[in-house]
Amino acid sequence: MLPLQVGFPGGMEIIVIFIIAILLFGVPILLVAGGLYLYRQSQSDRPATEEIASLRHEVERLREEIDQLDDDKK
Image (cartoon, rainbow, N blue to C red; front, side, top):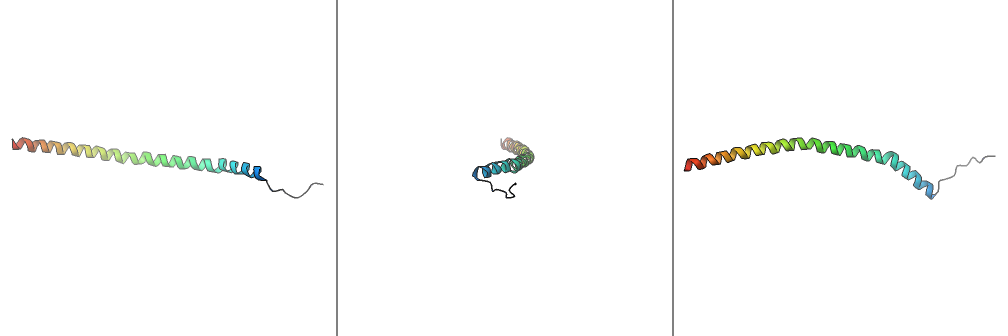
């Protein structure tokens, strides 16, 4: 006769089940979260470069204005 009782996993079996669960669920979640983080970082860099370019243009315009004022004083 076959016993109909199902045994409970011991300590080592629980550890193996836990490792398999981490590999099946944890790693894909981390990969998706990392991908979203990198995507958002790449999207946020575009406005920053545009802002830096406009600030550089503004600084150049102000320098030209200061040079013109200095020339007028002489």
